[in-house]
Image 1 (cartoon, rainbow, N blue to C red):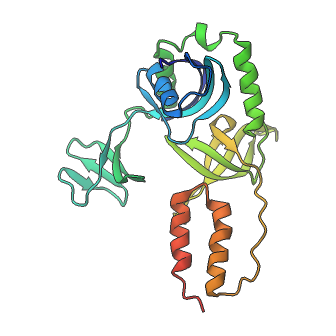
Image 2 (image 1 turned 135 degrees about the vertical axis):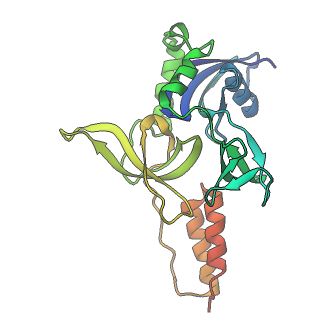
Image 3 (image 1 turned 90 degrees about the vertical axis):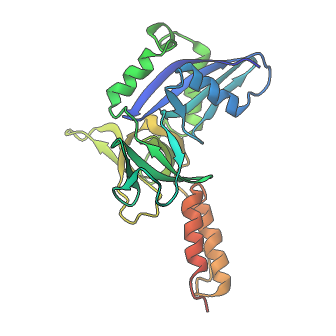
Length: 273
């Protein structure tokens, strides 16, 4: 099945990330395969940007037409990581430099540890220019009045909870070319005390010194709201309470599997009586 993606609007989030709303036309009356949709959007920007895994949301699925929202990052080079790799020098615990003095970041994905080369794009204006340079991101397409599209976007903003954001909300957001899960900790205001549309969000991480980052509503893929959890009963330190703790924290941190697995290992490693 042939798919064609047309970007209707986009928002530059930072020097490596953008949020894109696109309409995908196809010859199918039913659902469109998620991977095919991602490849269609990627092709629409000449592969200069790639979808961030897990960020795509289907805004509307109609016959022959599917509207999606997806966070995208500047395309980068990824290679498997091995200890003592030739040609690479460790700069810090997760930063490496190659023989050409290019900087690589050490990351973990489903396949294991990988090195990701830093992108040449490191400025928000550059990624904006990149979007504008793509053949289908022009004044005629970005501002074309497509009532079906704009109605779908408005409806999706409500369904995804991004039209009303408050402190303590648990959100999935895009920042720095990655997808994060965390909490809104503050809403920013200008000198007159008026809210300016910016928020401080802190992502879940195994780094105890994790610092909040500044984002806008456009960066939020989904707002899960303020979590409501019942505290587990019987918190005496025992073998049975380990299962209770794991079940409890799975509800809180289940959206971040990497972090939750580390927390689970720590809980199981305690000397329960």
